[in-house]
Length: 117
Image (cartoon, rainbow, N blue to C red; front, top):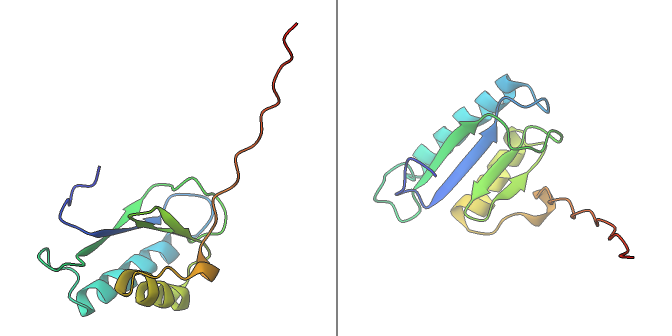
């Protein structure tokens, strides 16, 4: 559950995993906060109110820095300042996640069934 229930979009950055330097994620969070403020999305009454948060781990453990956008739990991997700007423009401002930057979820592994005797 998110503490800020008025936010329409939530951006999460993994900062404690092994996939990226926490300092890189901190810089991306600062960049995101600046973008949010620049576009007025930090105002709780804005129809596209957006917040950003650091989380311990998003469970990806590769392709860091990892960013997730809610709603939808859309993940982006190998995020840097340039990719963040593209993601913000497309996904946050225009509700069109850039497909080429989305980090897909792995397909579930099939568990072999045991034959009954």
